[in-house]
Amino acid sequence: MDAEAIRMSMRLGSSPESAGIARHAVRAALGHSVDDWFANAAILCTSELVTNAIVHAGDGCELQMSFDPPGTGVLRVEVSDGSQDQPHVVPPGDLWRVGGRGLQIVEKTSTRWGTQDVAGGKVVWFELGPAVLPEIGSWHA
Image 1 (cartoon, one colour):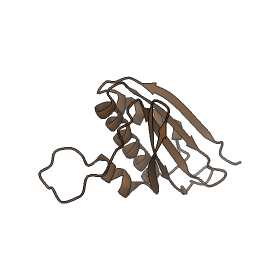
Image 2 (cartoon, helix red, strand yellow):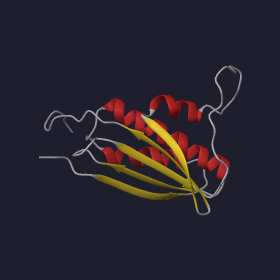
Image 3 (cartoon, helix red, strand yellow):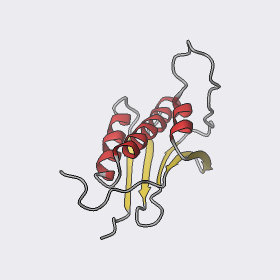
Image 4 (cartoon, helix red, strand yellow):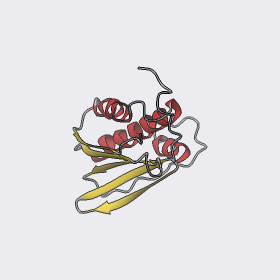
């Protein structure tokens, strides 16, 4: 039995709780369809992108997730916001800097990431994969 494709979309408000809501939603959507490393990487990168959108755009964001395990096992998460300011990776080296390392984490953890201009804002996205999928029956609830 092949795993089904997973799709999720949600609007997140401009509040400190939004990153936590996004983490829980991604974890719940993935369920037991991937190993713990993959799920944790997805949660971490999602949290960083949502946090950036909330902090820098200030008006909430839209989270979209797609995961196609029968094909490539690639997870794609997109976070769109109403700011046209492009994110940038802060150069490493400033050990005393507070904050600004979110995209460094995404860059090192994800398979690839990027941005796309859209009408009224931008989309920042990352991909993970291909995932190592557990064999059917190899996990316990």
